[in-house]
Amino acid sequence: PFSQYLDSEAYRDSISGLSGQFEGIGAVMTTRDGKGEEGCEKVGPDCHIVVVRTIRESPAKKAGLQKDDEVVAVDGASMTGKTLAETVGLVRGPRGTTVRLTIVRGAGAPFELAIVRDVIQVEAVSSEVIAEGTVGYIRLDGFSSSAAGDFREHLKGLVDQGLERIVFDLRGDPGGFVDAAEKIASEFIASGPVFWEEFADGTQQVHEAVAGGIATDPRIKVVVLIDGSSASASEIVAGALQDTGRAQLVGENSYGKGTIQQWQTLTNDTGGFRLSVAKWLTPDKRWIHGQGLIPDVPVVVPEGATTDVVLQKAIELLTGAQT
Image (cartoon, rainbow, N blue to C red; front, top):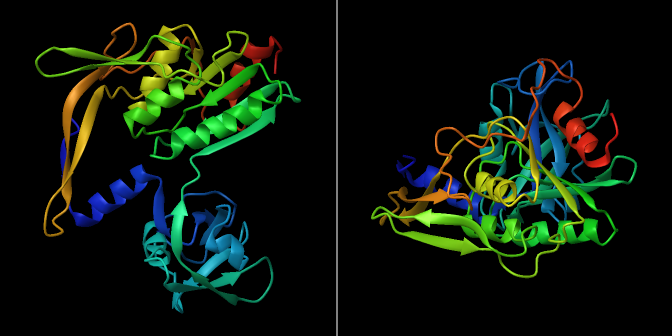
């Protein structure tokens, strides 16, 4: 399962995502309708391409692109009728080249920003202090090649503030490199297995915690948030923290991807493939493939919910307070 051939464009996009970098301007965009709701399909009178944020130290930020700016044209061509993916494809491009964005900001007149593309480092980690200064919150959006180092930096920032309650949000995280998962789980697990790798002949190889984790002190209480889109490397980390008793899992059953893939580039720009080469098992040697991790505290998100009930439950478990 999950072995797949990818053409050259799909393969480059996949490898770019895993590497944690791409060539572009460093802006996160979305589509938004007149009511402010995201997810409309094609740009038109009631569907606009809007900047969500700019990545730190990116060309977009340096050029002055701002949150809520509307992108109406790229290199002079109107975005009317374009999808978000098509727009992003036009904005991205080789480093050193220039893209011209026509911007509408608030009620002002359209103006143009010329932005020189560069190599962008993806910000896969974010953190903040919540619950009136009592809980550290850290979110991981993907296990890229740079994720473990970025995660450690953010986690250290929270622990250095003296916080002993941590919410680790893995909802919507599709996974990535297993070595990043091993390092990130080791920030919470002092020693012992993080996961097992099982090969076709039945032999197993243990991957043990890397010494020197930031939050291995048992006084630091941890809750991990998962949902049906938490997959692969996300499940390695969540399963490790669950089996070792290092954290409670809160939310919905995870995706259930229990295999490991190797990537192979093909010659003559014909793309590449990923090939499943092993299973992975939790520290207790559970194989969660096809069923996912079952949360210790299941939380069903009501349809149309306007508050994050999963996060609220995590805060309640960590603080003992009703929220």
